[in-house]
Length: 133
Image (tube, rainbow, N blue to C red; front, side, top):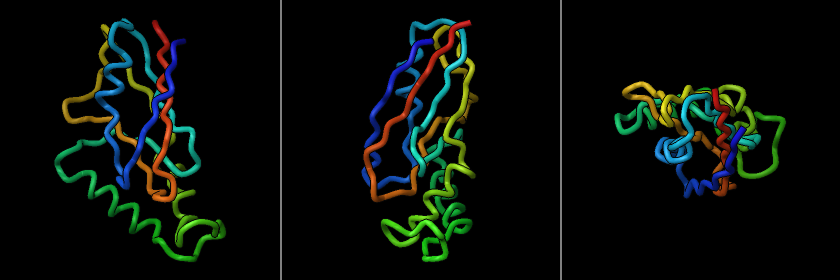
C-alpha cells in the first residue's frame, strides 16, 4: 500500500474540494483502489457535485440537522461545537474510489470533498492510501 498525508487548510470553508489533489496522488499508480480518510472527530468526506450550489445545500442541510446551540452533551469550544462531533456519524470519515490507469474513476459530476463544520480548527489532514490490484 502506498500512502500520503495531505495537509488541508479550510480557511473558514465547510466544504473543501480534494479532487485535484487526489488525482495527483493517483497519477502513475496503475489500477487499484484509493481510500481517502479524514482522521478527525469533527470532519467527514463526501462525493458531491461542486460549483452547482450543492456545497451550500449540504451546509444548509447539516445546519438543519445539527443546530449550533447548547443542546449537546459535548460542550467545550464554540457554542454548538457538540454538533461538529456528530458530523462524522452522518458524513463518513472515509471513502474508497476505484482507480484505473492512475485515474480515480469518479462520475462526471462527482468530486471528493472534505466536510468540516468545526471552525475552531482550520488545519486538517487527509490520508490518501492506494492499494494496487
